[in-house]
Length: 191
Picture 1 (cartoon, rainbow, N blue to C red):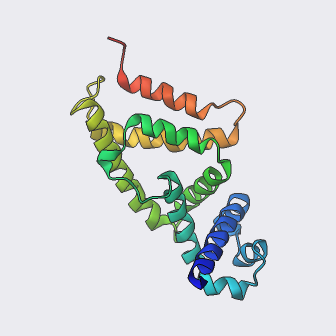
Picture 2: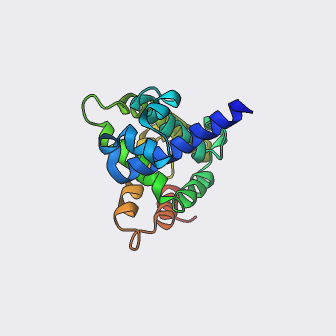
Picture 3: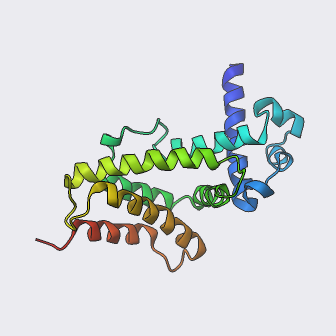
């Protein structure tokens, strides 16, 4: 019972951290602000997350769990382009999560940022997964003649770039629609 309460409290802290990071960015977010949001002292929060970096890692891991429906990341062979489109639909219903991820991603390119290693490893993994998705969908060549290895970084760039555009202008950027247009572009002209 105590363990369940502890896990529940950790989840509450992570949700609060997502909100604070979305509002202020990682560098502007403080442990004190997160603690206040959940009704703890900063010392009380440190019982659950001993450092700001540990809390950041928990936020990033939780975001990945949300993207996979609560499970671990699926094996590369389990992803399909239509599932990616569903993920984009899902993301359009949770702007706070997308904003947190985007803020952390943008900040992570600066020297010494604690999320840099996470994103570097994550992007290597995601490019590999997207290569497998594209190969499963199209074989060794897409209709354009490009290989899955050549297109995978573009697919990832479209996914993340659309998030930034949508966050900046949600009323004029249809993120799910634009992603589906990109998928149509990948498939080439109708036969």
